[in-house]
Amino acid sequence: MGLNHVFKPLKLRHRTLRNRIVSGAHTTNMAEDGLPGDRHMGYYLARARGGAATIRVEPVPVHPAAVPTRGNFRPGCDSMIPHFRRPTEACKAEGAMII
Image 1: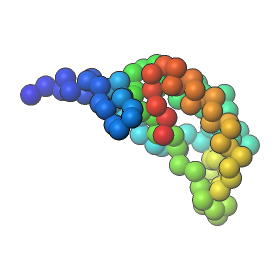
Image 2 (image 1 turned 30 degrees about the horizontal axis):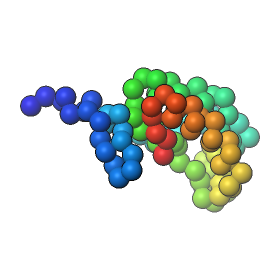
Image 3 (image 1 turned 60 degrees about the vertical axis):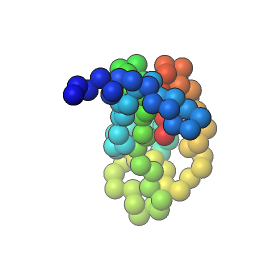
């Protein structure tokens, strides 16, 4: 039994992933003023170009006391949503989905 199934597409409801490779969520500490910026763009885009079908972005704190270090996202703040559009669309163009 090989791992050939890892590279086969996977249908999930109305979406089809190009394979079963996932880049898991982990903190990069690259936020700029609490928002995703150019460094995040390059980071996530590299994973999409490298073949990941699904990219899970890093966690977002839900309360100011939950921000352990600088470089984390703003806690409980919807102002970051438009800033995620750029890497989301870029990764989508490369065939990956960001969650």
